Length: 419
Image (cartoon, rainbow, N blue to C red):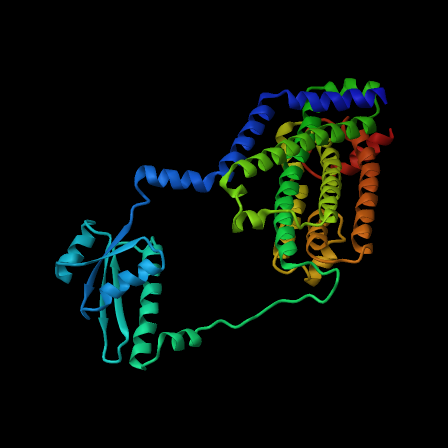
């Protein structure tokens, strides 16, 4: 075991001491703090450059009554839009819009049936906020005008638009509440990205590390003193441990940034991201499926990395594995809205999809215990079989040199390993 721990330590410390690892970690931590404070930064930047000023819209009011009511309605809706009556005729306003002296203007009138006729004129429809706010306000005014026309009181109008009382009720004792579902959905979404990027980054790192040692002929010296199997699993565990440390650092940074930012205050957003009502079992499953997913793909990456002797060929060799990760992510993402879909149940028992899909189901549904346990057992069995097969390929693959860009080299590596 001494050789195993030497390679484990070497794999861990070599990557941990590199400038790229240190800089990447710092950038990610800084990005987490930036994201947590993004709303306040945008608000301050808007005030600094003047983007937070009140919008102004010129109005040609043919009815003589709509402009004032429009301003009152916008004020009631807390919209920062100022309505100003235009002194110029329509032709002059059109010229000013074309010359970009003003952004837009709106024409208002009432037809014979007391229906509001509005025309919004602008040089660009990229900004949808202003016309949408004006349309909503005018729609409310239209309701008031029609109510006055029908001699309806304000209470009668409110009665017409009163919302129905619709409540959701779970009769199962073990069913998740809506708050628990929302929080589980957030955790599942975050974990999906963590597993996705962890598998892509660290598996590629393992494959590249193996290919680098082969290209520099260091591999020949290593396997003369330690078995290829020990070397492979020491690499997987070493870089995996480094990845876990890095993810823990990101998690702590995210927690601190959340508590120090405005998102940590008591509001609807903080309540949505709160994990207070989340079941402990969900967090346990998160850790289990993350670790199993990593070791499954890391073992596969080490196997594929042993088949190439140039680092330039690594990405092409691990492309099939990357596509599996992408497929698992897409399948799981489609189930965020409805995790009870039939194909999700099937995919959750396919080892390469299990880490994401089964966690999606176990996090958002009340599954019988045998389902997650069966998927975990299948994954463990797959990792053992892949490790056994990978060891046979790795034993011969590390001795193969020359161009190697095809999975057909698996047979050649196995035969070489037997010799």
